[in-house]
Amino acid sequence: MSIATRFRRAAVTVATIALCAATALAADAAASPIAAADATGASGYNTFANVAYVSGGNAQQILDLYVPRHSARPVPLIVYVHGGGWSGGDKSELQGNSGWQTYLSDGFALASIDYTLSGTAVFPQAIYDVNAAIRFLRANAGKYHLDGSIGLWGESAGGQLVALAGATCGVSSLQGKEGVTRGSSCAQAVVDGMGPTDLLEQDTHLLNSGALLHNPPTSPDSRYLGCADGLPACPASTVERANPITYLTSSSQVPPYLIVHGDADPLVPHWESEILFNALTSVCANVTFDTMHGQGHTLFFTGALNPPYPAQTVQSSQGCQPVTTSDGPPLTWDTIATFFHAHLR
Image (cartoon, rainbow, N blue to C red; front, side, top):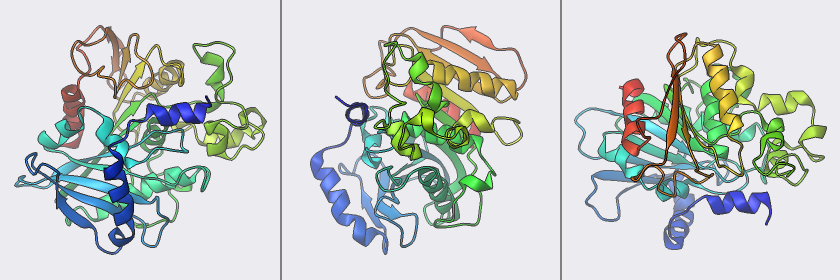
């Protein structure tokens, strides 16, 4: 089985009927976003489906937005970026996370975005899209009862994209010219789940030593970067431009990070999150790193954030304070919500 297939299978999607319905609505959504109640009508949020965040853009530049119904004040927003090896998956992956509605009931709006996949356009198009979606949502905050504060949450390839977006606030070369071009794409908090942060070094640190999952020409990583001869043959500057750690030279515009990674991940080595944590601490950023022992690449989908919780090691550094290490508290959907509350309120 190819690594691209394995990435796609790792992404849990909603029912086929829902996906087909979303596709059918996409053409109309660009002109007139659809406001609809959730399927049960009982969970207290409105859904804006297939909203085009780039006027006249491609079919992948759309998002779903979920907004609590009964908040008296505008609400903060969490933007979810799906995984899939940058070549597959879509915004419906959000609903495969068992705790996604926790954030809605806790007073956050949620946006799940599609972005241009590597089969259509290579890097930096995907990060252009993430930043365009953020600018669109911030520019339309009043329309959707949002307060303008934005947190990012991504897993796997989506983790790489949110880690990159968080680290590149104000970096003009990664902003693109899509959609709303004025306003800030900076985020106030980032949750990075299992995201690659030094793409060329992944194969060196895989658990199944000797395997080549990321460097070959056919790998999702090579296709993402447009490296037809594989990552090692790419100019170093091309690969480094996609690495979040490249941009961590100052804490002045770096938001707080919560990094989550299982130490039994067979696809993206745990080492990738270790070096991101070290890079963030080196610039005195606020960062927490939760290592979930024995967990693989799909921990957000397989119940690891629900009891009984796996053993965990939590490392944390606030500003330039020394790193503290403990075995808890366990990571749950509520503790992630608490992280966002601390920085988006």
